[in-house]
Image (tube, rainbow over all chains, first blue to last red; front, side, top):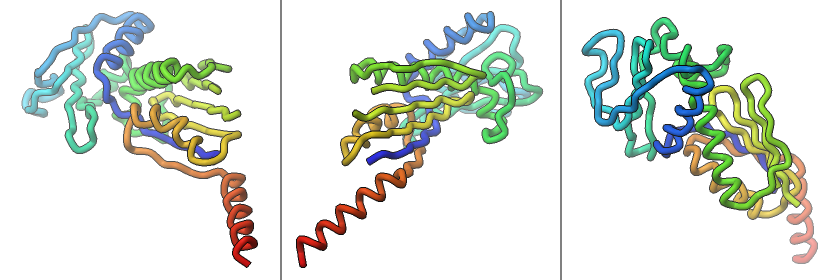
Length: 145
Length: 65
């Protein structure tokens, strides 16, 4: 049956997340480190006390971004401090999208690139034909058959 | 032949729009990709899909009578 599905992307594959981050770092020209089992740095030293599976530390950015596995959701949840748009200027959307939360906007570009990698990998695995693949204003449109 | 239009918005939310497909195979087409992206999803059948279901129901009733 013809149908429409809308999926809110959640990080399930850290390798693809790292690949998306590498692309974004080249795109925006920043340096970063990937840490494992660390507590992400936030505004207050004791703001978040749990270790995350993966932590992104960007040179020049005041705060880190952590990804912590959630057993119930079977994916990694992002942990970050959105204060002053510090993270957003490196990992976020160019323009604020009102239908998304502040945290989603702060990680928007990273999540966009992550979703694109996951989608195109699956398209290639299933040997589907890509009839269209273009990005306009931060929105990517693909048509496959 | 089924076509799938995939739109990835600026924050990574993905919309799949499947056209030209009938039956459950249409759902199989995108299920694999959807599951790789996350479990928080909304599915809406298109009006023409519901139309086809109705016509099938009518045919079944005709067979019974």
